[in-house]
Image 1 (cartoon, rainbow, N blue to C red):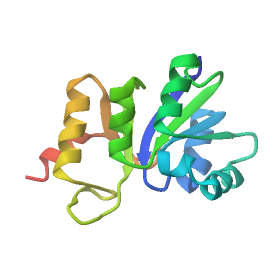
Image 2 (image 1 turned 30 degrees about the vertical axis):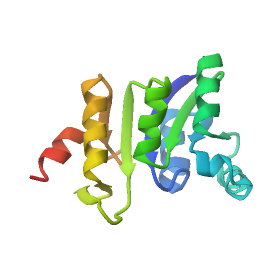
Image 3 (image 1 turned 180 degrees about the vertical axis):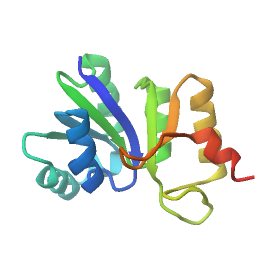
Length: 162
């Protein structure tokens, strides 16, 4: 059973902050990307494996594959970072049985229907309610882009919108 050292929503997935900072800080050996569109795109899978720091295993799984692996052996041995590209995928995986205790919401880009709740986090009303529901179910959902940032509970960021 792997030790899950971070579960994160970040539209960029594996990039400088994750590859250069979080992996080192958390001593992770593996990154598991759970996102259907990535897992089903050979080019993206290859790209993420090319940008992985030396010695770091990157697994790109569909939600279904992620749930299967989670149920089988909690992603194997070592220390694992789980990444989702979209808030909806994090919620879908949780509802399907991938039970994480905390969720770092780091980067959700601006798009039609989304409102800024923090510098790098823009959410729809549906996404705000989804995160509130996860918090109500005991998940520590917070915003923290880089290690130096103070963790901000998502409900605090959402409440400051009004």
